[in-house]
Length: 126
Image 1 (spheres, rainbow, N blue to C red):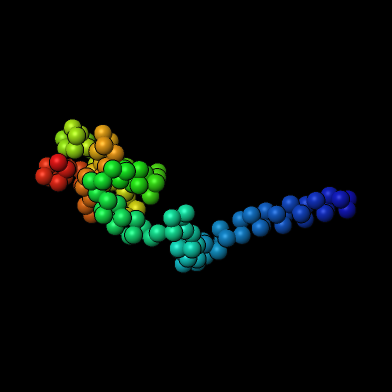
Image 2: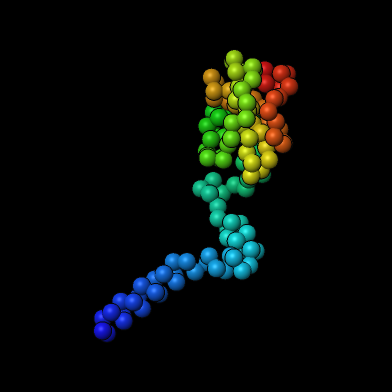
C-alpha cells in the first residue's frame, strides 16, 4: 500500500512539472508572449534583422539557402511566374506578412515585398 501511494505521488508530481506552464499561459497570455520573446534561434537575430539580411543579399548566390535557414517551415508557396532564369516561386511568410520571390535555378531571392503578393511586377523579378 505504501509503495502504491509513493508511486502515485511521484507520477502526480512528474505530471505537474511537465505541464506547469500550460495553465499559466492560459491564465495570462502575456506569459506566452514573454516565453516566445525569450526563445532565440541559433542565429540570435530578430525576425526584422533576418528579413533585412535577406533583402541585403537579394540577387546574390546563396540567398535561397539563407531564406530556407531563417524561415524553415514557415514559407507557403503562392504562385509561380516567369522571371529569374526562367521561373520564380513566390513564397509567403504568414507570421511576418512578407512575400519572397525565389529563383531555384541560381538559388537566389530576386524580390521581397511586404504583404501577400501572388504576382510581382516583371521588372522586379528579372
